Image (cartoon, rainbow, N blue to C red; front, side, top):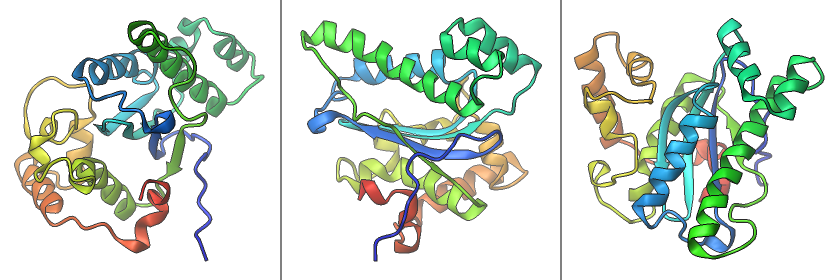
Length: 223
């Protein structure tokens, strides 16, 4: 019997989610570097203020994110008010939930990206599947597994043989000291409190990674 997977879980404060979507008809929208870069720029504008981005990978016809919802605070409320959208106003008036506001931010991300993509490619219509998937990560073991699975995607889909050979993945960011929008310090700390040891464990866990059948509720639709 197939597992019952909630692909559209409510986005809750302080919880991490595997977030992904693919293009309609598997169109290779991210084949050109410029569009992966564009998507990440839009991600920083619409999503980063309200999420800690823990990992990402851009594939030719789909993307993956591991993202943790930031708890509501005075700073978050200020950022919501600054959006000036109908959803942000309704949230401020307690007419919609935080989940509804956050889902609308993703909608704005996609619309903004598609507007530019369609104009440059001289095409019309939708680009992504209608609803983006967001699977709740319920424990530490599953969190670590999906973190590595996201980086493993280019290997899984046979585009590359090494994690470090894929340009649009957060893998190499964790091994560098460059400025980044990725929540690198918080992620590595979950491997070990010592920064250098955590990086070594990070690499070892990636090298030993295998897709597991008992974890397929985290990415069942992707296999």
